[in-house]
Image 1 (cartoon, helix red, strand yellow):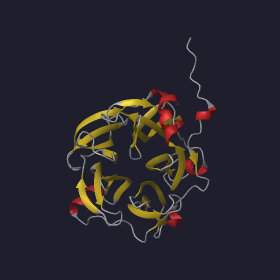
Image 2 (image 1 turned 90 degrees about the horizontal axis):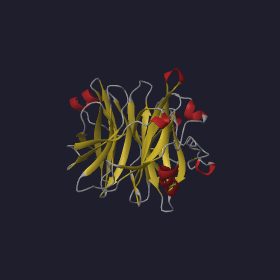
Image 3 (image 1 turned 180 degrees about the horizontal axis):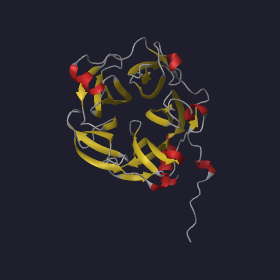
Image 4 (image 1 turned 90 degrees about the vertical axis):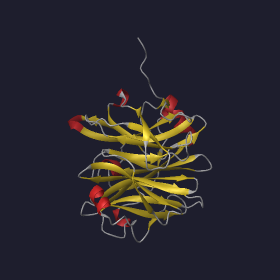
Length: 315
């Protein structure tokens, strides 16, 4: 008989929660809010941190609200959220529901991919910024029933590359990859990360911007399993994709790197959620992992990049 897999304690807690969590809450928003969570974050070329926060209003509408920091820990929201297009098309395909932004720097420009929700279901939208201060609407970049879009930080084989999560009829959506010559028109799509029995997954989706390493593209993502009483529980996992062909998985951790256990991750607008939309790699190899807790607050954890890569093979 084969021996059961037992993970060593030395690899159990490679992700460390910031002791001051949560780092942002609804009380930090200049306007009325029910929650602030699932925020994308980027360290600009000038070394400043800019977080694009998902803010939910009392009217159940969503805003994308920038916040600034000099250390990646202490953030202050700006006076106003990002101004979105005042067009019939944008209103029809968002109805005030746009959320979960991911920010990628590519060749000196910043691109924000986010979910746009309406009666037509969900699709992806794109903003472009030269400096993370002004934002230009570029358009919708997917068909309906797709979300969790995130761009790779460089072209691959001459094309822009995106991970996303189309929904499936059985509710078991999973990560796909697509390619584009211009960031607007997308194709060449392939399924990447189907659900995995080890977690008892219901669905998964891309999280932070992929990180290029010597072993491959490190993808930090969320995955959902179903526990008793049909309760969804959101975890964070890691995988490595091939550098030249990121539709191929090189290695994938069999256990989550972070699961909801603290009060701010278990209790809020949604029970038992850790959900990442951003990560920043520092020069010393530390990864600042930004994640939402219980669809209510914004949190921070840290890990060593080498440990996250190792987890793909050995966790």
